[in-house]
Length: 234
Image 1: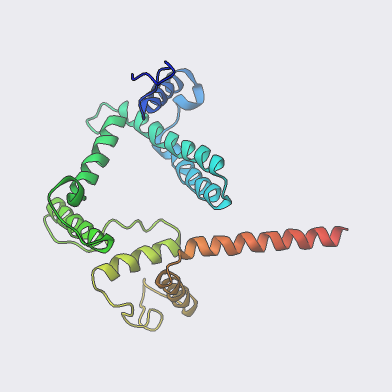
Image 2: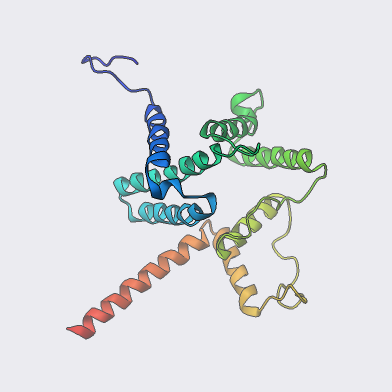
């Protein structure tokens, strides 16, 4: 490790990530609660910690956000540790997780790691979509849909935004018929549902995330209700 000017040893950036892996190994083998966890039992925490990180970011407190990022990172390391124990050929380690994302980022950024030239951020996104589509076709043996890979389990406003963002980049028009009037059995859409989808698109077109905007409105409403409660108790 390199020495600093005052003679102290300077840790290489990322060295503490290795320490985290060691700590996770100790927890998995030495703590009864950690030892019995599975991917399924940990899944709610992965979602919960992500929401807590977003809330900390919204609070404007850098220290709180850093702490919550650590909790999110723990979930990644924990899941990888659980997977590493499998001996049925489906297991993987934290190194495999890191290797996969390194390979993906390198492959999808040919303007950084290759000899491709881009004019700006929009062309970067276009290249990303083209490369991703080629990956899907190679994996499935067919072209597939530009919407493949968007998780339907995410919050509805986020889902609507993700679908429209991906569809727009593929050249699909904003309007593809009346969602409520043209829905059918198994695909029923109420007028309110169609209006909410349209509202999510309005927010996206304005450069806003509808999920975060609704969260902000909900937090503001909570404060007003709490203020009302205090006023009635005084």
